[in-house]
Length: 213
Image (tube, rainbow, N blue to C red; front, side, top):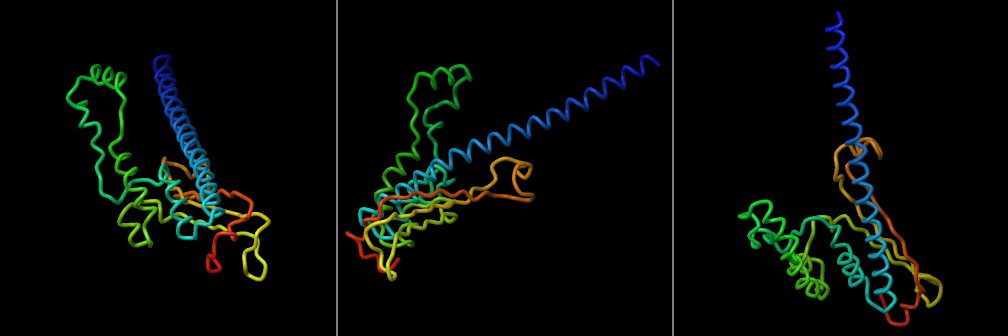
């Protein structure tokens, strides 16, 4: 009887350990997701501020929309256009090294992303594009379709006037990155909408006739 009881206790400990590991994984997944969303919210605020600055110096609606998108590149997911495979690791020759040599090489080097060079060259061309169709052929990301940008200022009779505040709101939908996110948000949720707003002094009507936008 003592031998059987010992086996039963061992099996109970194993089950409890598995349950605890599952709970710990859920907590860590939630923390990772929250850290990503916190960083994304900061970048969203930066995008709203960039749009507000662009609007107040007289850039039109299309230009401010492009500025907002560019400011969100770091949280916009995979680059769709131009089609590009980042082969920085292969070019560095790390795949042919032992783990120890690869680690030493990484510590003693200044790694650079080849994709960053492509993006840096394409951003000025994208900002100079004249319409949405041509801009998407220059630079595009998988999450750029999930961006809403709204810039509005004080108006009298439908005409924007100097004074008051320019309100800029930028929204973006972020997909679920880690499993079991529904444990922390609404059931069956697959994404989260984040929003950030910025207010600046409204003086863009001095420079811009934006056709009532």
